[in-house]
Length: 247
Ligand SMILES: Nc1ncnc2c1ncn2[C@@H]1O[C@H](COP(=O)(O)OP(=O)(O)OP(=O)(O)O)[C@@H](O)[C@H]1O
Ligand SMILES: [Mg+2]
Image (cartoon, rainbow, N blue to C red; front, side, top):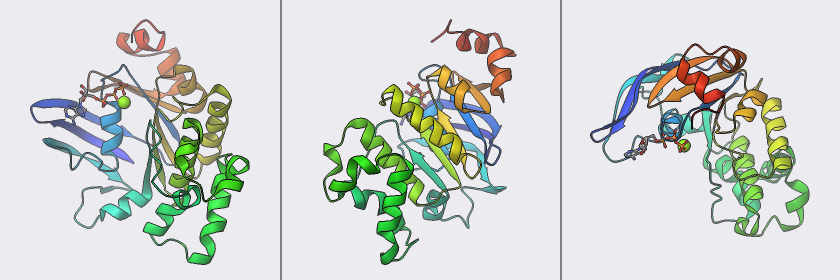
């Protein structure tokens, strides 16, 4: 996946200016930067979540396997199947826990009826939630803790088998133990999936990512290997941010 000269905004406000960056297949990239620098807006653009926002305008492009995601032959459903998203705040659907996991599988008609329960179990096991919910699969997800709801949403995102997973501060509501488990899971997923993770947790960016992109005031200030960006940043703003002297 790659952004090429992506400029976008809402109404008179330009939020991102001329962002170009490539996300190598199978890698984990951390998006970092101060609040309001455009990380979420950028992430949402990668699966066309901004298209319907009032006043939205765009120049430049985003490509998946060399094809524009706004291309004439690209169906939005198909794009969303390949590029999944996990939001900062868990957003379970108003249906049972088991139905949540397989909601995407159903919508995309990926599996037939006999398989869906096996898929639900294997995805819940994968995210480490199975033991906690095995006895209450028919219950509402809204009685789960916030962290458990987030894991459920992760299971749902994984169930459709995306190629790229976008994660917006995915562990900000998780306790340290669950956060560690999610980080380990991301590392395990990565060779098969391309992961793009927004995080304010700089230690997490260093732990999980191979590449880091630093956003500053709507611009891509710096992108490179995570070691380079943290240990030998090119720009003074990057240095100030990664050493905790800014934001
Ligand atoms: N729909 C919108 N209409 C107008 N402005 C918007 C809209 N969505 C986002 N913005 C503006 O775009 C800028 C970037 O916001 P964004 O949410 O992408 O930042 P962020 O880097 O994710 O910040 P944070 O770290 O706080 O989550 C902000 O100034 C925000 O107010
Ligand atoms: Mg954000």
